[in-house]
Amino acid sequence: MEFTIQVAGQEHLKYAEAICQLIAESAKARGTGIAERKPEYVRTKIENGNAVIALQGEQLAGFCYIEVWSHEKYVANSGLIVAPEFRKHGLARAIKKRVFQLSQDKFPHARVFGITTSLAVMRINSDLGYKPVTFSELTQDDAFWAGCKSCPNYDILERNQRRMCLCTAMLAPSKEELMAVDLSHMIVKQ
Image (cartoon, rainbow, N blue to C red):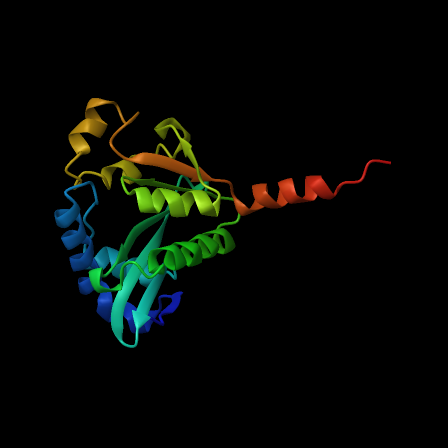
C-alpha cells in the first residue's frame, strides 16, 4: 500500500471531524486511555503546521500532531491514529517518524515526550530514541495534564498526584542535545 505522509495544511482541515471520530472509536475499541479531541483543536494543529497526515489517495489513513509545553521546553507527539483498514502496514511508524522530525525541526531546543498505553507506540518511540522516564521528568504544565481528563484512567493519575498512571512516559532528547552528543564524539584531543 502506498501512502502520502506530509505536514498537514489548509487543504486537510476537512478531515478534522474524521480524525476525531477515529480517535474516539479507537479509544472505545481498546478500552484504554486515549484522550478525546475536538475538531476545533485538530484544526488549530493543522493551521499552525503542527500536524502530520497520511492519506491513501483522498482517504484519511492516519494522523498525529504536536503539542508545545512549558515555553517550548517540551513538545509532545500526540493523537497518533491509523484507520483500522490501514493498520499492519508500518503506517504508524512512518507517521510517528515524520512528526518526530517535524518536532525537532520546528522546536530544536525542546525535548520530545509522549505517554502511551500502546506497546506498539512504545516500540516505535524506542526506535526513535525515546527512553522510559518517570512522569516527574515531563512537563508539569497543568494544561497538558488537563488533556488527560477525558481518559477513563484519569482517576488513577489524580489519585497518584500525577506521578504515575497506566501510561508509560517516554522522553527523547532535543535536537540540540543530540547534536551536542554527536559533536562531542568528533572532538579530537591534541
